[in-house]
Image 1 (cartoon, rainbow, N blue to C red):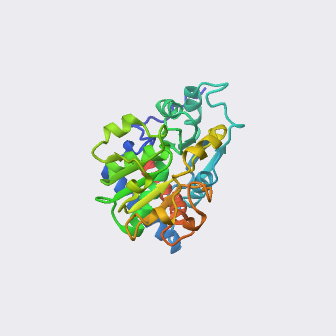
Image 2: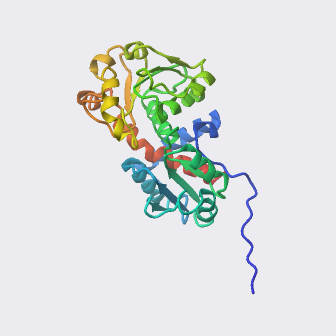
Image 3: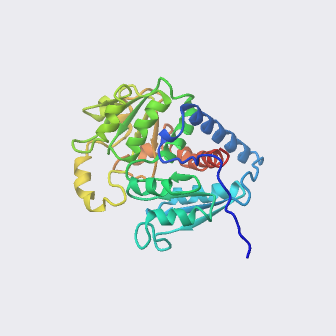
Length: 311
């Protein structure tokens, strides 16, 4: 009988559950690296830096961009991505989350989870032996913020000292933008219908960076970036009609963008519902950065994966 000893970790595993899991300097380094990796891919210089590394991708919420960007990213890094749909896992159902974490983290090198309750991913990370990435929860969407920050840096430079308007639902994206305002040193103005404001705890914690505005026009006035998201996220389908009535005056369109700075950008994490939260014309307008923003999920996440696996 041969006794096999499991490898011992000599350092604390780093997770990425919110932007606050990295420092300001680390954020800048990841963004710089994402831009570098993007250029290397364009020029045919990309290297298989993570050969034989495997990512477990747990999806309780489906997504086109999240699956494509992580799976393609791991392939470009020389690794492999293992897709696990709700039909393929027992996360929080037949098996406790803690046990799923203990098992899966012995088989893969890194885990990406897209789920509903943020507590699920926190519990999984607590018992995981490998890095865990939040690919979206009901509370936060930090990977999208990496892509958004990268896009702004590419097109306009540093976000420090800039102003950003969030128009629409105070959802997980809005919460992550609040964290980003503190991390990147910009002013965030938020306009939401009554009853749809973001986390009051987050707002109070970052009151020096965040301002709640009475109207979309007030929020957008003179800003460098305008951001919105769908009015009804996954899991809120039964609220769709009610939300459309509440958000009727919160569409981002050319008229609203006219209040922003002349070179202001527009972003949306997609999928977008043309004619609802954004006009069809604006989505394809020159000041819309949504397609570059969507592509940058790929590059920003590659830089993040490399960062987490080389700590």
